[in-house]
Length: 346
Image (cartoon, rainbow, N blue to C red; front, side, top):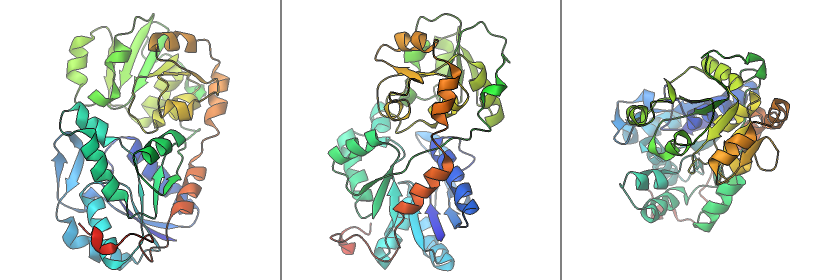
């Protein structure tokens, strides 16, 4: 198949959306499919005001039609709800082409945390954006149930995977020379990640945070005893995962949490809240502890053997993720039955 992927999230961004898209594109190529990614790097762009790592493309509407028509795709997937996603959606509706979308990020909660918009308003806008899609791909059963309760329709599963060669227990050591046990958190250092819930815990050993983001300077001042490593490459992260003792995931708003799989593949047990993401990845596998008392979860996870974590992570593959993605794609021939094209080309 020839697949056009419209996305506002792309390299050099480092997040779960970009990781998912690049890994699935790689698998699709290995399966013989051709993917053309329309991303911010193809346009002039400006930084998103509340998320500067994301670039907002300019002038997309004037060029998107030429790009799509030159590629002649068999399927169109709109990954994000930004300027590129909006332009691709408008073109598809105007030309009667079906398309799929995905729900990657809980922007309603993120905007509410920053007091920029109430969740009910943002969810209403997202429902309108996704309504004409032939399928809305979601990463977990928990998110599927939640979005269905919020009025989203045609929800389809699109799972995630992990690279078991890169993230491997054989890398275990102690490259930082820190007292054990080492409690590690990896991800964007931002308000929605709820890092103070981890950093304020009374735990033995060392607390380590890997990642960059807008909250980093304030958290460094507030928690001087923690070790903040900033952004690290995949190879450095792999060694950190394998060398830590517990992976602490304090976020309550992630739709999945790829870092959970990376930690588990590295033999690192998870401590997290019982919320979407951890509930779907860890579940009742015994590879982690989910508890509203995060300190209790972190201490209990110390007793989990690395072999159990690794074995559970190996159930999640990028090849299976790519196969699910293919199953969800539409033929690009028409909009969903019952959705009037003239209702929302904007």
